[in-house]
Image (cartoon, rainbow, N blue to C red; front, side, top):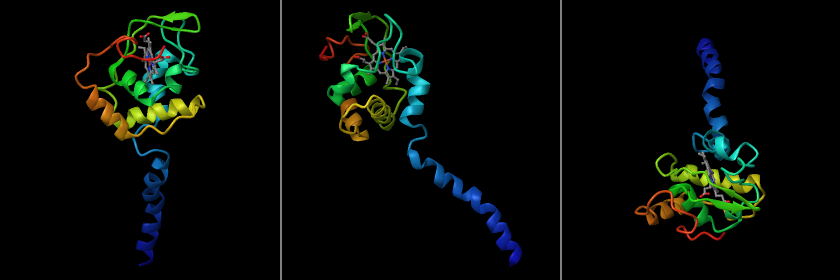
Length: 151
Ligand code: HEC
């Protein structure tokens, strides 16, 4: 009896660990980790982007604009060039529709808002699911104009 109790105690820390850790996130990767894995090469760790190629995310009007616009940019990607603070960025923004789930796209967007202190309503998995459905037939890599984004 005493021995089995000891054995039980020995397993308690192991058994508790998975419960304690994912408290930050329900997804395997948090929005920040996804940013570090998928976005950092182009937009850089500080969100400053790459001159003339990838636009900065800090101060991007897209972050303070309608969340649906942001969701569409992430789902479809974008090309054609955009001007920010007098600089034109001409790289190609990848489409994430085949790589990131609705929940992951919501996580990344919520992380962008949090990092750059943009007051915006929480983006939900459901919002991404809806926009994914609405844009399912749209071609990938539209221009900002084709997406009808505010410049
Ligand atoms: C291969 C490089 C690359 C990667 C990786 C990348 N982006 Fe981009 N992103 C771009 C480029 C280039 C543009 C601008 C496209 C254009 O000018 O049409 C852009 C545009 C954007 C915009 C619109 C900015 C604005 O001011 O209008 C957002 C938001 C954005 N990216 C977020 C992300 C997020 C979030 C990730 C990671 C999930 C990511 N990007 C990954 C290159 C990249």
